[in-house]
Image 1 (spheres, rainbow, N blue to C red):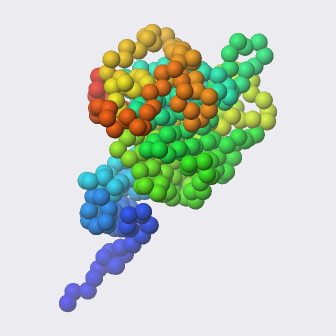
Image 2 (cartoon, one colour):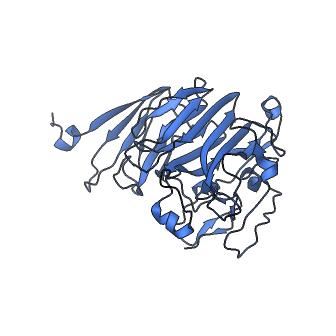
Length: 348
């Protein structure tokens, strides 16, 4: 009987606890000796029993390079979805909300929404989904409005509430985790570490850390995916934009990228309105900082309120509303050419 080769013996089995079973990640050196990883989705997962290789473009699930694309496999979709993704939101892609704050709508158009410091605004309001935000900010002497950033997100989904907060810091330390989670009003502890995962009791809300600290994905079953990273306002940012920040606060905030699976044609909110089929973006082309107002339409009383003038959240009637698939704008990749599809052109 032929003995096993050293390569066969070198197969390493890593077992990750999964809420619906176990996912086994099998690392096998391919013929060219480059590291690669294979995922085994258990028979009790939604996609069934499958072994899936990571793409050559992202052969591993971890890397010291924060800009590297990593292999991500979701065994909870019917066909074992695998993709290359970065561990942070793409602030230059549709569905993003970054900086102070700059949005890119579902239509691919860039706009700014300033809001006001220490107030709350509806980002997305649909019949069965509400995503709110709290803004923090700073107003230097002589300035007529606040500089603002998104500091927290409040989500209402399937009669549940979930929040994610970027905690305050006088100065930034990347070795400190600045993410604070809560579920139905209770603080939630999600251990630090790449692929550390939490599920709601009904398995319809999933939170996964993309790296050890400060970055996570929130998945709302069949509805949305929200990728967030906590970042500071850097000294370079302060210098470029003349924020004139105080010495005791680096204004830790979120960079966010949303991907929506199904939204109704009536969806509203600062960002949500840009996904409506009849939305005509009033942002003027060629303007360096096109600002869309409407603070009074989107202002809410608190992080979990649904009392804005344009809010349509109504979970009791949501199941009776027609929803239509939304183009997957949130995952456009401009590294492969000038055209990203959907009528959007990638520019340097």
